[in-house]
Image (cartoon, rainbow, N blue to C red; front, side, top):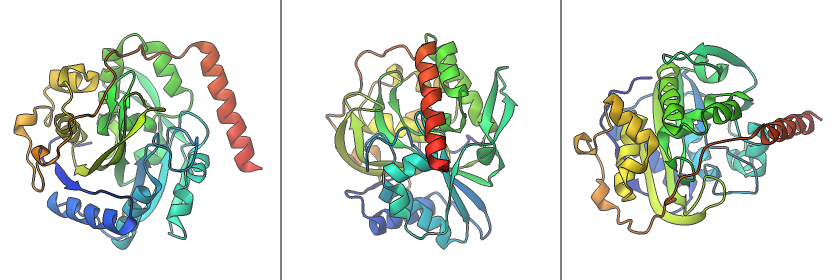
Length: 313
């Protein structure tokens, strides 16, 4: 993935209406000079954390996913949608949260990240990454703005962790849970092996207070896009008026000197952060260790297996 752009496109968007979101996506892509040609294999990677209920705050909103899918289809792309949820399967979560319904009869493929490829990251860690994510021509990241009990907030960069599959995800938590800087370092190493594309973030209604599963709604009325997820995260930290130094991921980006980490050097072809009046977004004051105990890991595995059995029956 190329991390060399400092441009971040931002727009107001107040409601989850497909037409309104699709128009915003077109403006974002135009401002960033982002193009897709007919026949391009595009993988949309929303946040599908858990299929608790329809339109749950933990996941990217159904209308948002559908609007982005429609834009790429209109440009002739071959579109698939997938993720590696913490609980259940991607297809199951998309069904339970209303994404499948919102997509209607659009010619998209809903996939579970069943196939994986073992990859050695630059830091030396081996990890199983979704083969679908590695093989697509463009990886389109569709996170939702959320507070996060372990990482302060989960924005563009954190959402790529969903390309890690199966027990590898809780395994990372188990191994690096008490070393958030180590976790962040490996996550940034992961970006190096993933295809380039674009992040389009759902900030229409965010989750704040706590997260990433059970926070409170906060109407930001915002959509944003960037070719560089680091730049988008820096812009959003600025908009949300959060302390950059409390974000473990941002600190690691700054430590590495990534383009986009310095908010002063960002370019805004549409709206600027000052155009968004956000004064009451709450992120956790104290971060908790990122840790899964073995029993919880086994329980998660059983839930995944049961979800797959139910889906195939």
